[in-house]
Length: 602
Image (tube, rainbow, N blue to C red; front, side, top):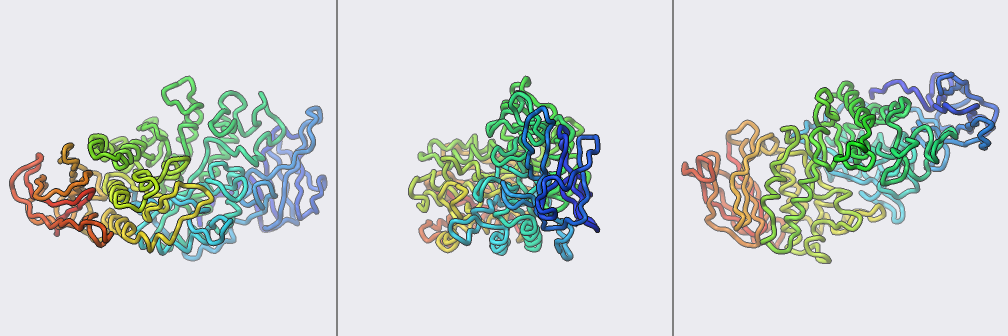
């Protein structure tokens, strides 16, 4: 595994361990740990006169616990500050000690892996603590998650996006409160366990994308706070802004993006996940709070130019060092500059979450009355793209944010208290079909394929009994993902940039669109979606080519649920009789709240 030289933290060498820390206001710094009996004065660090302190300890080794004792200037009248290393790769827990960790000892074997290109990715958002819980009252772990990789592989998933795994307060958390950004969460298993997770994922053909949090740190169990004793205005000290720019929705802990050492700290952290752990990409949490103080992009007075330039720098570094890895932004403000190239002034991300898609599609399928399904909004959601590139957006209808804090899962929203109902199944899977057939990088949230009804909480695990009980819904997702990835070789168009939404019937609540990559048989795909509780027989739509269009998927099939109508959806023989602005047409039959997919043979 490729790894750059480490500049800070505990660095094991041929003889002993070198420790290096940034503490520019310290008057003295000592190292304490298991190697010196926790003696507070026996191991002083050398002042490098550049704000950094270092020492080589021959007696220290991997596995030793340690801390820094930082002495502020005498006239500050502060007691010695016991601090965990900001660069610690491993900690006992969020308030425990740092642990000397040697990143070179993990056995990657003959580790080679190439992530699928963006147009062929299908992402599964996963929270380690709830994904596969083995013991009640304890969170899931990397090792327990590994047990489900065969399941994800069979489902067709080829990338997992792991919610934040940096050390946080306690054992249960969403992860968006990082106490120690470089340390892998101890309750999940720590750094070696995460490496096992990445290695196993790759062996199953699954890429790993790590969710990172740079818009704030903590705010709990945060040793970075006033790390060397200095602060201004009652703020956080050297790692943070000490003026109004410190304020975020999560506390006054926004990093100082204008300070070189802090910029380096965040840059080093981003590259660590890709270099040391072999992760295939990063997803940045709420970058709007890196770009601006209050997240209001329409108020230039609150912009933080240093935050934007930091994202540009890191994305350029990643593209230079790891051109095949992906960086994803959660912006949620439809800002096309997020995914524009740095050279053009953009932030340089490969893709960003598409807020419009999730809101418009969810609203359409949740509406109780068919008359209020806004096909115009759905159509815009399907066709939207950033910077003329369909695969610069991540599209989804469920995510950790969309199904938490009082926002229910879609089946539950459709019929509260009756998420297993016919209506909930039919309409929620329509949303899933739109995710997997619209141009963009599709993402589903853990349990979505199992018709999970409970809103996301960090102590509520996935109910794996639903694999059996909701096998039909699982089958819909499995079949749709296979079509989306063109695993049968006849639906290449779903991997293409192109879309033509050619049929729009607001009265009948039917839309149809053509997806293609290069055009031609096995490439062109026609998707028809009926968003009304009514069958349609002999319904005429356009087709891009004459000839036989074979039905590849019918979500009303009884193979997915014995209560479905199994409304016939036969193959269509398209005639050279223009319709919908296309050169050919044909008659289709479609069931209520149903999606049908057609393509031609070679």
